[in-house]
Length: 259
Image 1 (cartoon, rainbow, N blue to C red):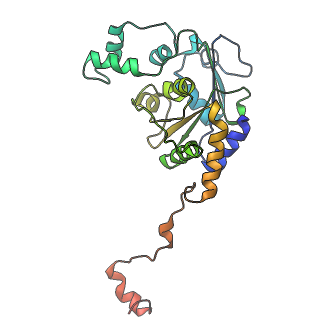
Image 2: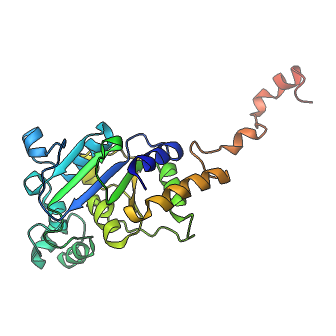
Image 3: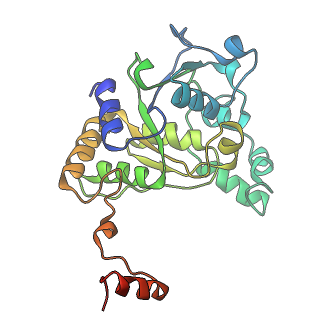
């Protein structure tokens, strides 16, 4: 499915406040035409979540090479530096996320990770700026909008969207996991993304691998046509007779609205 058509479908049926984001992961270092690279464009490195934020809020096209990474944890999960020593994994996650170093090692090993050399260039673009073939689409929205994404994703098969929630390193769940598994993913933003990338407390994200673009778009359209699930949400309570406080009874009788 063409990226432009997917964006139009998402805009029509999900109505996110920011652009859908196209992400491509290349196993070679490549100059990317018309793309900003953090070190060159801004004079310093950025976290990948910041690049995604620039793409979804400004529509910019951003390219990350090894020297552009400002987040060591995310960089490591994308395969830079090879395999980490176990004691380093324990130190990274404990006590920030786990009670013990052993728990930290388990958490680190459970995170989505790419082999060394698989992510030499990462290209990110928002909305119509994506002039490349993306591996993943990332959509941000409120819970009701992400629920519509889930409904679109399961329309064809009826299989619920299974997701993992570590509360950290969202870039791995938005990009690596959909690529590796070929499945959609719901993502809860962690503290780092909220602190550095400006993700709001009411926002979540949804990732779709390229192989599911067409079925996802069709699911959004068809589930919208079915009528039960839409954005804005059909608020059926506005059809109900209002229950007024008893203090209004005398006025209602005076107006002939109540006996």
